[in-house]
Image (cartoon, rainbow, N blue to C red; front, side):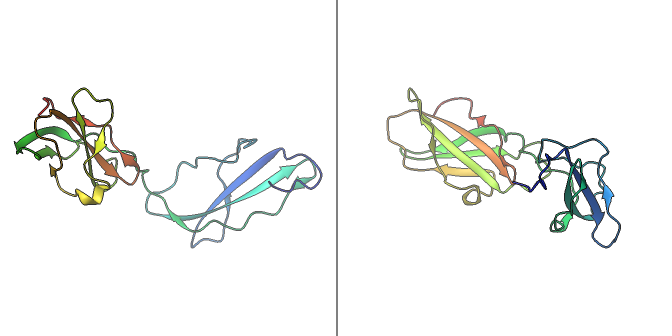
Length: 174
């Protein structure tokens, strides 16, 4: 909790500067309060910035915080779109080979891999066929450990740094 110097804080002042510059500039003239987060816009992609915050009350503006770590401005990464057209391409008594195409949109982040899940028809619960996306870096996966005689549904999610996409479903149970 910030120290208010005995009087209530009226607003926060967020400033930015390019790392190599000495000049700090306010990011907005709008009052920032009571929020303690602010989305800074109008940054130049590829430039490196530092930020600091001051609090203001009726007495005046307090000392600024230490500057943030330098950070490069870049488009934010969002979750990717689902993989395209997942399908079962082969199966045995206890395995199913799945294949799909990469998502149309990577969310501006590298696709780290895919999560594959299966569900026995009639069950509510989806089970993980792999635990982490890096265990499925390519657009195919062999689901193992299935029980002979059961029918299963399958779904696949693409994963980037922002998280997992919505699932794409194999159309027909296997």
